[in-house]
Image (cartoon, rainbow, N blue to C red; front, side):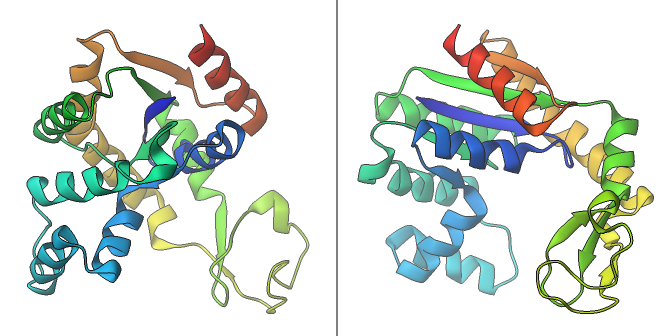
Length: 214
């Protein structure tokens, strides 16, 4: 099974991708992770990306496609994969389509997790991170606690800038302007499975799996 998973900040996309990866026994391919790994491994595409990043520039689409191609050609991707973080623009989506056609992968499912904007803001605004270990918790999880459940550091919880309301609203605006046209691109091809991202983690995961089987 080959999946591309979309979702706005705070909708739980990363969590669902990890669970699906475990249940379906296919790799969760985060483009940020494979970019860093490609640079570390010094692949041809990784060397190009490293030079570009060292100049403080964004890695261009053609280099990212080469890195994704390298990753999809690895043995663990043969029975499927979950692609997370790419494509982010329509141009990238078109380039990815060409790559998938080249690799003869023509049965891709697109999963789009959605949630009400106010619910996302409320959800993210109720998260706290540990200054010491970086783990993230909800207010409910740390209610009454003075020590981090993970590293036991005292008085270490704080609200990250990324989880402040004004920053969240800006992140959502960027998502709408850049990623929503990509989702529309796939909707025009009749490929998108839309899943309500509000509910328990297990309920949402069950909905995704049920939709993929239909």
